[in-house]
Image (cartoon, rainbow, N blue to C red):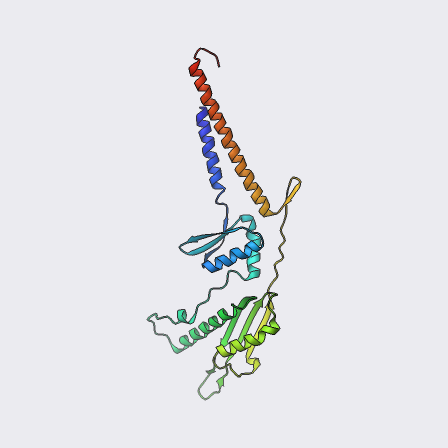
Length: 258
């Protein structure tokens, strides 16, 4: 009966050890490799361990459950993951369906906005870039042509100086949109909004005389769990060996009381 109990104890310890290996929670999924790397790098800046998992739908980023709230706030302040954008080639790929001139125009405006947004997002310090485009259009026959215009929204980090970058953004957008070159500045509105600064407030956990962060507490708890499992395994092996030794003694001395 004793060997059976030892085997059951060993199986239970192994199950506990395996269950402790998959405690991470999915933070983001269906990501591109570059976006996943940016997220992991940003979380590492705040000492939050993160791992990646690749599947058919893309890459997932996983963190410990106690770091979910902090991770969400950190990524929101950093503008991650970045919005997926389509380019002109994807919008106007051949589909075999005939579109009306209005639909073609709407698709072109959308694709043009996406292209300009993608370019602005490459500027260091830009968290979010949004562009709204109005192309020249004649509302009705005989009416004057409505001029082109555009509005640009930029959410930026402190590392970006709006006063120095605005003339270059204005020139870039004006030359990218038909009908804006040479127009009055009022036809191209650029709005800069500072991004929210994340204040990392790490709650502490009391563990006897020590004060630990949630990440440190999770690490210590994991180490103690593994140590406890190993201790149970050692005790089980010792009990098993003592049982076998007692059985051998009983066989060697059948008449001697145990």
